[in-house]
Image 1 (cartoon, rainbow over the protein chains, first blue to last red):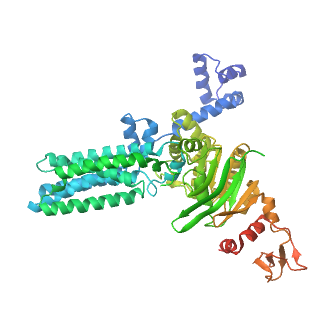
Image 2 (image 1 turned 90 degrees about the vertical axis):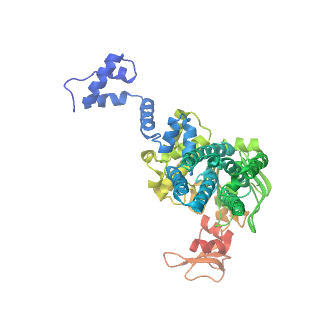
Length: 278
Length: 288
């Protein structure tokens, strides 16, 4: 559509250069919306650099981050946008992962409440085992070849990989522990036993991360989980106590694992940087 | 001639019982160096070393004047490196913009505005400005290759390592790729691998032919073509003297080898030189 009156070229040039006051600029802008003739006159007067800059701004405003749900939650929690994006790419920081973990723990807690006698003991053991191992699986899936599709590009990038690993491990641990902590409230006769998985879980996670400096993280997690499961099940069976593996002996063992793993990891962490012989 | 920015000397690498690199060595100066070779020749292993992803078992490597075996120097290399792996992985739920933005963060670009400007720039460079908001999983294979190329161009790196960058691209996209890479190669170093002798002919002033983990040839495309000079002839049938022979569309046979007396010699191509060099093994792969 073309209006009945037209702005003169001098005024349009001044507008294009940003030389008009706000009132006249607003008036011209309102007129341009409905006047094709003046738009055609204005177009050649606008410097190419200005058009590029404005278009770039439009692109960035419209395309740039329409963040996914995890990233949005992190941003709302005050996490810096670049860190939120790095965490959002973590395979084990997905809604589907959280749901799977919640369902497994919820089921075990439910069974511990409704199952009769020995069944409740087995369900409690199951709950503690899942609560301890869920973070291990999450940490193994958070970083490394095979599960992280951009692993190789990440290795070749300057950001220190141990920093990325640490960030993701802490995020996975925090979410896993929060889910397990909430599910523990639903256990019958909620007491210290409900959080007895905490220290073993930390020990197993750290052992997995350390072992992953020699073998793939997923293989490390499987080795750690199976070994620990065998030990926990045999101790439980021998003492007829569903939380036997989580009592003081188990806690001391977990603490020892944390200390030893931390010491070994401090010497082996350079392997995570890639480009060095393992 | 400029100083070499990539120096490789007697590099060995084994994976279990398999020898991937068996004493490979060459220099790559500013400009484009193409690695040509059949599957399993060791090209990808070598490029992963140039990208500082993999360490050699023995031998020496210097990139942009630094030693990637030393932590601080490796970091300095990574700050000036762009890398496109042979099979780049993607976070499928990200859009093209988000994915390249993610890599930009890994490249220590923390200022959001500057980073987003750079992401938009490299995506426009590879002709993907119209699909920036599209999820990676909704992009075609060729578009994904271009997304992978875009991330390698972030920050205008001094050393660009591209593993089979033209695989899966249609002829028009390959032309566009050649433009993008050749524009950047005037004052930077690009090392790329390819199966396409046309890519080498069109793009690389320098070519290294690899076979069984060693550099079999190191020179210009013209010199590689000259390997087959006086050794290519046409005949109605496959010649007994030919090391390699195949039927051409016009029905005659193109023979490569020691030409018999009176043979109808023709001008060799880059492909003839390459095939003659790597022999029957490469020919079998090309035919398959």
